[in-house]
Image 1 (spheres, rainbow, N blue to C red):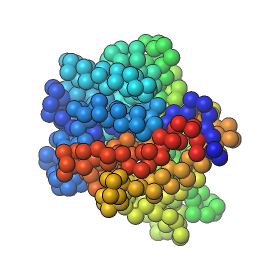
Image 2 (spheres, rainbow, N blue to C red):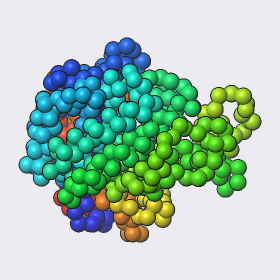
Image 3 (tube, protein in one colour):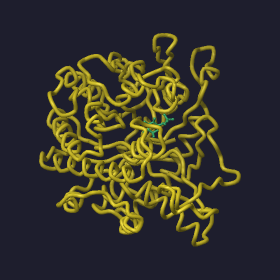
Length: 462
Ligand code: BGP
């Protein structure tokens, strides 16, 4: 074994409620923004396949957890659907949802798979969005109540909790670049939404700390995209610094350090875009930092100084401060259009060690979306996804290197366990260890990468 990982390393995968559960209108679930948006615009991103037709984990969780065992999982991250738990977001608890999540948690534990539970994965309950979503401060209280209910109901068995997955994405998608509902393009509103998400997060952490769950850890999951400048020219460095402030540090700093970067505050102030804040917010954020950081990594962000002077009268967008930079010779995943740069995962981890107190962390998502994987199915029925094995292995080498250099990184979770429904392409790009055949009633088959991963997990290395 050339790359050996520390004892107890967390091997597993990640997923989210909307992307796997299905049963969107079953079991007393309320609608969320995805159910609603899909109904309005079924062909915009979704190719006519909505979150009502996903991998059907709601009914098939037992079979799926058995396959987790077969693919070497000792841990698994999923999310609780807020609108399943509390159909209107702030009122009655749905007992059928409590039963379902209890069953999932118990089944995982019976298979010696540790549940990692995330509370919010892009899925705002529709009733909450109708009163403004994260723009409305009241929603942060409804969310903290929901979080508290989950901690109380499941905290005896679930010890790893996360408030949000990639909280910057609903800001980008919903309020800047028009790929999530409510399809707003407005920087001022985006700033408010981002700020309230941090407040909601801090309130949930406060609830968690009050309960003092034995051995419990509370964290957040962030998609950290290292922001590389084209060159070391000061103008390029400044461009990458600002991109880093907007897309990484706007959540990383408050969550881990308990405060916003002063440069970010100054920049927003200079342009007149500070959010509305309430008294006591600063202390709330300061006192409620996380114990554990989940890091999602897919691709870096490369930027350069703006080539043309931006029009100062145009509405402000982050791109006022930098241009994207296409690095010659970069390696691409052609299916998803994302750059593959394995060393990025190491750069993030070193940054966490050097600038964020070497907080306990793990890779909570990393993965490769591929279209048309059926063509790799062999005569025995197995998809031979050697490209995925290579993708994982090359990233793991850099994680291993970071561990050698003292980074406190405790695990690696692939996105994702089984092929699932995606926010931007429904079922086009497949990411799973396990394939799901929608033409054959969702039939599951383990891919080559799933069996490979099992040997890695068993050997704790490769
Ligand atoms: C992450 C999300 C996941 C997942 C993944 C793959 O940003 O946390 O929910 O979907 O990206 O992206 P996509 O499905 O858009 O290819």
